[in-house]
Image (cartoon, rainbow, N blue to C red; front, side, top):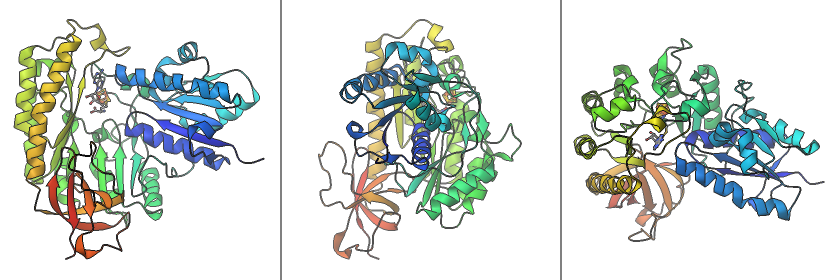
Length: 454
Ligand code: SAH
Ligand code: SF4
């Protein structure tokens, strides 16, 4: 009999991409093989996201679309994991009775065993126990969704911050860090397999090891910086209240640490920040931004923002716009607030009407677009070091796309660059190479340029 096959859908954040890689590695380790498409797989796994109402709807709609596949091939198993699985547990089976296994955010490593149990027993299985997983046996394997050049490494799980709008602490549990030796072993294994960059993941990397007494995040960065063969280190996400001077200084000190920080601000209004339980003020946030720019001139700063938090007035929103103009982020992710189960904000009034939330989002994105374009335009004519990740993925929408681009990569400041060969030929260029690129054009979300032969 040929090997059983699996296919994985991954929705949501990098943490899910990382978890999906672990699931894939664990299944491969037990003899399963990758299926090229879901329609041919014996097992379909969905990693869901619950951070906003829309993400949850997307998860249920994907799970619904997989029903005919199961009807067409009755032997196929469907496993649903991630934050919606953790949040809904048994209830997920009521809404989607065709699901075979519900596995929560603590059960990632247990999935293969759950699937094997389900193969022998016709009843659906639910594992949303908070029991800690055993330590992973080894580093995760490559996942089709991630570039083998740049790999995610989870350094901590969960969150203790309880921002008023956020479901993460409820579905991912309390904050706990992975031992530094385990993290370093994983980084070394990825580098040995061809990775040149790692992205260290956590909801609040700044409190890495604090509970466990492991010497803090800046110390971990130093140790990762010493890994031979690694060229770039990134991390996400940093909570502004915990961003220390030590970490700010690390940008100027550690040569592999990329000059980019994602520092979610959420709002520019002190009143809203306090209602969100973010525990910093607008002035404190802006102070950290200027310290970062002093430590590393030209550092790229990106952020997350929420519009339409309950009680957000037109004046509060104006404060957010003025913060955007002051902070001059390189880019932002902006979201319309949505109520999430168990969160205090769900009980707050008055709610901002959906049309008004949508309007504020459009205005905010318009303001940011001008700032991002100006920052990108200023890079035209400069030379940038680009880490090549793979063959060209052209800018979305096609308009103005550099048709001749052959590779796509990123600058140290995390700008996506589409690279064409020019007269230099570039025959030796391959994923993982660091090349110098002369930037020729700025696009809304990326840059394009030509390989610099010199
Ligand atoms: N741990 C990260 C963020 C994780 S969630 C941090 O603290 O920055 C990613 C982003 O989703 C948040 O930064 C926030 O902007 C957004 N978000 C979270 N809950 C939301 C909600 N209920 N409605 C709208 N946006 C939300
Ligand atoms: Fe959610 Fe706040 Fe924790 Fe980020 S820090 S995951 S926004 S509770």
